[in-house]
Every structure is written in structure tokens, then in C-alpha cells.
Image (cartoon, rainbow, N blue to C red; front, side, top):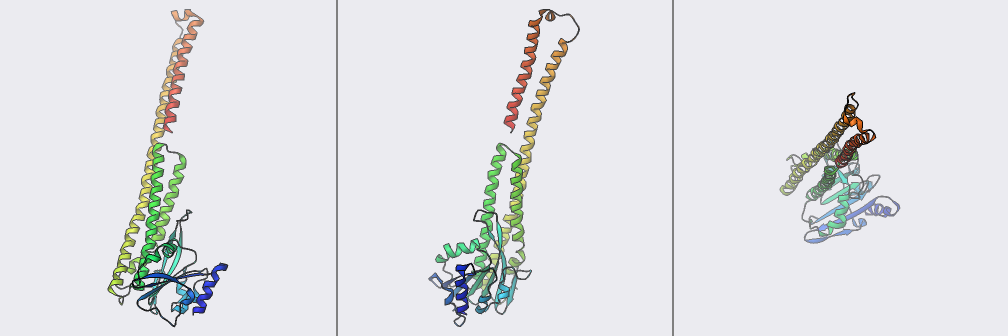
Length: 336
């Protein structure tokens, strides 16, 4: 089996599967080992825990020698429930969130195999939270005393943290947009709100698709033979899922509130514009009234002033029109 694992690891340089293995021991620093050092003839003792992570486009056939079912380790396979128990192994299928690279949030299927003191994770593309644990956190972990199922639930808990981080980033983006809307709403802000609403719905949809799996982990009939500590860890991650789900669902309500703010500010701007136009209309009507009165057929000293009287009347009308136009322009500019 070690030769087959070495073949998997050697394929890294030419774009093939990539394998990383971490060995945890009780009260000892964790260390990354060569995949070729794994041997089926030497099972992992109880004071150690082995984590094997595989990035492969075509599954993890070679890992079948670890005792797992290769077909159940297909990230895009699995049962509708997302969980299966067979031949002493447990198989979980989840959707991890990738968003730290600054691009649009994507969801990557991950298959988790849990065997005797062994945890295997298989995915077709790099996964943010797994990469963070391997590169930044694994060296500080002291999990050699944990059972494999407890370590796996810890990974799932870490995966849920990414959903909370994404939700916090989403809320920050929404806060910044609200500040801009309060100052001066523009039609482009509506498109941004639509994009945020789509993101919130996408997060909720992918997280909700895993409800059956996390609910099953919290039930006592998930694995009656597991230890009390492992059962507590399973219930804890199930409860954490419920909390994260509530937070993600609240994100959609935040977008609705921001949309109400946008419509209120837009309506306020429209009302200011209508008020301004009404005043201008009244001013124009006043000028027209003055002109109409002067056009009436009656004798008045004003008509005896000749060209000078005409200039005075024209100046008064122009002042009324110009003043109302300047005031309207100032109000309309402030309303934008």
C-alpha cells in the first residue's frame, strides 16, 4: 500500500493528486510525514492519530488500502443524507466554503472518511479551511488523545467557522453600502443589494443542504457504540451548525432592511425633487400672472412710462424666474 501512496504523492509535480499526511501523538508536537511512510500492515496505535488529506480530480482509489471504501470517498458521491457507516468506517460528505481568495464565494464538496485512529479528507480542489489547518494550525494542535470521530467533528466545526467569517464579511460590506446610501442613493446601489441578497441566499442554500448530516450527528442513534466524549463532540458540532444556520439566515433579513433603507432614501429624494419642482411651477405661474395683468386692457400710469416701464416689468419677471431656477437647482443637487 505504501508504494501506491508514494505514487499518489509523486504525481503532485505533474498536476495529479496531492497527498499530505499529519501524525498527531499524545502530548507531542504534531508532524507532517511522507505519505510513503503510511503502511496498512502497521495500523495507527491508540496514542496516535493520522490525518490524510487528498486533492484528486479522479477520487482517491489508492487510499482504499487504508481500509476505506474508495467509492465512498468520492467527494461528489455519497448518500442523500450525506452520511454512511460501513465496515467500521464512517463517511461524511459536506460542502466547504471557499472565499478567502477575494473571488466569488464557491462551495467545494469534501468527503471525510473516519476509521480506526485515521481521518481521511478528499476533495477535488483546494479547500480554504483545510489549507489553513494544515499550514497554520496543525503544528500547534495536541489532538493525539482524541478519537478519530472527535477530530473529524473538530474539522467540521472549523468548516462552519468559515461560514461565520463569510457572514461577517458580508455584514461589513452591507454596512459600507448603507453608509453610502444614507449620504446619496444611486440606482447602482440597487444592483449591489441584489448581489448581496444573492450571496446570502447562496450561503444559506449550501449550508441548509447539510442539515440532515449535522442533525444525524447530534442524534443518539448515529453510532451507539461510540464513547461518551465522542458523542458529546458530535452533539456540540450539531448545535454549532444550528447557531451558524441562524446567523446565515439573519443575513438575508439584513439585506431586506438595507433594501427598505434604500427605497426610503430614494423616496425622500423623489419627494424633495417634487417639492422643488412645485415651487418652481408656482414661481413660473406668478410670473405669468404678472404678465397677464399687465396685458389687460385698462389705463394706468405704468403704461405711460414707455420703454422704461417695460424694462422694469421684464426685470421683475426675470428675477422671479431666475431666482426660482437657482433655488431649484440647489435643492435638486442636495437631493442627489
